[in-house]
Image (tube, rainbow, N blue to C red; front, top):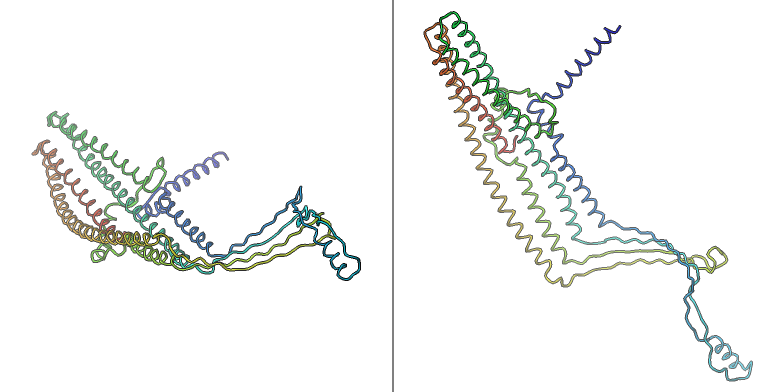
Amino acid sequence: MSRIIRNIMLLLISVSGTFLMGQNQFSLDEAIDYALKHSPELQKSAIAQMDADAQISEYKSIGLPKVKGTLSYQYYIATPSQPVEDFITPSIYGVLFQENVIPKKDLGTPETFKFSFFQPNQLTAGIEVNSMLFDNTYIYGLKAAKLLKEVAAKQTAVTEYNVKDKVVKAYLSVLIAQENVSNLQENLKNIEKSMHETKATFNQGFAEMLDVERLELSVENLKSEIGNISNMADISKRLLKFSMNFDSDEDIILTDDLNKTMNYLNTNISKDIVATAQARPELALFELNESLDALDVKRTKSGYLPTLNGFASASGSLMRQNLFDNSETGVIPQAVVGVSMNLPIYDGGDRKAKLQRIKLRQQTNSLEKSEFVRGVKMQVENARAGWINAKQTLEYRRKSLDTAKSIYDKTLIKYKEGVGSSIEVIQSESMFLQAQSQYTNALYDVISAGFEVKTSLGTL
């Protein structure tokens, strides 16, 4: 029973390991997708877009009705009052005198008494509504806020493009380093085989110790070179993981190779050769800035127009000697509606100065857009020329590699047959290694130039 459980556990561990390994394998497209999902820059861009939505809602609220409720209670420890002359007594006596009810007499100086309009307890509740009725600057400001959301989206597109560019370059750097390591390891096997054969020949007395030592030195040099390039591959891989925002402590396996990437570019780059740079996301940003400036001009000019606001309020007050005595006066209502208009007459030249600054900003944006378009045009032309030149160089390096390989193979055959020297083997090997390195670098240059074409055109 324990053996069955152990086998099941081993199977689960094996499946889990295979699954985890699969999770860390990336083609170039998968590496780009992973980077786009986990990039901190894009996460910040997403937050910026949500902030743009919040700004639109915030700005919309300016033009919506505002409703406010109030409730207050106050108790007068000392009730406010004022002295009032006794006007009631003289009036009554005046009527009695006039009707001869009583004889006229001198009433003397009128007395005064304290009179109050307040009760000790006062409870007031009310509701107030304010609303914008007309403000042209608000309308244009709302349009500008919506354009800002588009700016945030276009900025996200620019960020996505930059993330893709970083991942592509880092991915290719790893591929070129791994390709060089693979070539050197294959050559190391051949040299080690020749070294072992030469040692065996030396032990039989048919070779010199100098030949063995030369081959041993060649092997050590190759191992050192492999170590150096392997370190470069590790550095490139760390850079790739950083560009992808991948865990630096976990390993990553690249499933694409240079030849596959080259075939992809040969299939897709031809349509880019005749394309224009209209797909560049930066260009859309310039155009959105132009629209924003145009709206800003209209919004500022609208500041010369009057604004109209409406308001309404209703309230009720309960003023009593005893707040809970319903025999006293009940709630006293009050309601009012109205409108107010603000008419700008003179602002000290504020709007004029703002319009002047907007026009200057428009000129700057126009110059920057023109400069960007010219720069992109040059970048595209250089990228296309670089792609063509790199392809020509690659073809030349391929022929050189075939020639160097042929010389190396023939030199090995001559050495094994005893009609060649170890010096010739080492020299031909050095030429072959150099040709391999040059071909691999040329292949990388072609792929890099191809992606540069796509980057410059905005079709990456």
